[in-house]
Length: 120
Image 1 (cartoon, rainbow, N blue to C red):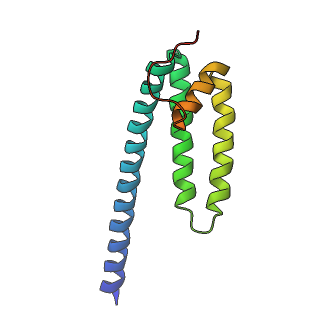
Image 2 (image 1 turned 120 degrees about the vertical axis):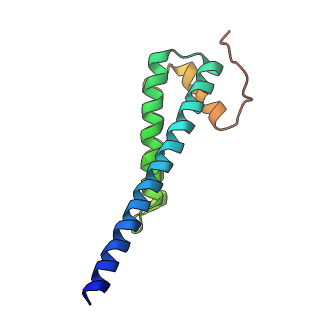
């Protein structure tokens, strides 16, 4: 009986270790994705480095929270994600100037082509 408990405990530790490693891989992928997205948007829209830093932090936080919501078993996923999207939108408007926000939103939602945009 003792051997069974020991084996079960060992299996639980292995599963927990794999789960932690997998979440680390997901976070790494999210960070790379955010880096690429913000760098691309900065080239297209032309916001400054301070805004880019804020956007990276905000976007990464948003994606991590969405990931948590999607993996939540008893949560109302869709409602939680909608709340997160609204919060993200408000934060975007605080970080970016109005014309930058409009361009960011349009590019992100495929309403305009991804080419450098200059305000005339």
